[in-house]
Length: 483
Image (cartoon, rainbow, N blue to C red; front, top):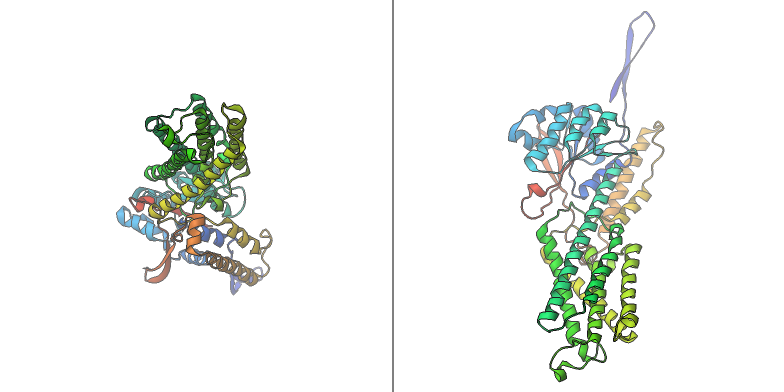
């Protein structure tokens, strides 16, 4: 912005002295937050009442798309107006109704999930129209009342934190639901085969204890350590069922193999089916069957919860303690409480077998992901972001900037450090290791392309995510307004 300076003596005319340029630079974390949002599959647009030139320069400084259009472009109406809103990087010199129209157009014509940040009374209509209205720290009461989320700290970094945490919540829900389905498939399928194929019935007490332990030990899954997906997630029922069936069926196969091999030396005191003419059905055999299924069902959560191989993702201490406690209690019951108890050596055999079965089931899970999730973008690397934040230097932003040029230089240097770390860390692991650790098969899609708007060359950033049926329905977008 620029202010004209003039001076004069009282009673006489004023004399023009010159122009005083001023700059209100973005916060040190604004460009970082914008880049992280775009790398996470969230499209960022600027909608501001400031002058067009100011909006373009601010967009350039924070790394956003610079194809900013005047607010009049949002008033075209019809499909053409909606397309303009969709393709533009943002709008300047807008009216309050223009902001709301941008939100409604993205929802109406492209079925996008839209978030909107704002601080003033004129932002309230757009905040209330968005699925996720976000009032910034110093927002007016009208904006706070219209918003779904109110920031209590300065800056927009909390917006990205909310994105990360919401995806972790989704991951916890998906892992629990998929685990419950997989465990149910395993138990029903395996017990049905035992009863109808091998004529081996289990005492009802075993089934009751199996269901009880399986439910109680999974309570801490709500506090589990989870990683946020690198792109927005959608609850696709077909994928959920397919993933659960893969885990459940392969776990059932592992249990059946154990049952068929019990009389071959895995469990002592059981006569061979070649001599008796039938597979084991004794109480001792049922004890071993129950312990194997109980431990295997508990271990299954470690495979269901991890995006890659289970040993690359550490569960929470509470979940690990609960699961292992359930397994230890099951083992003690099998050794000391049940009739015809198992020996310690037999329990060790069951544990070793179930750990090996978990590895096999986990490999089957990765094959399923490789085939059916070939478009997976992996997870957000929070460790990398922590390293970036540690290297970013910034001073007290509540004080006036004494040296604007040095401030801008330090700001650009911080962004440069972040980009260099991102490139270096992304090249550390080979693609195969990224897939095994996080399920990643490609990078998050943030496509940069050039477009010509009003006869000027601008850079346009688009982020598209295809999750099955309709591309438009699966493309997330967030409209964010900066002052």
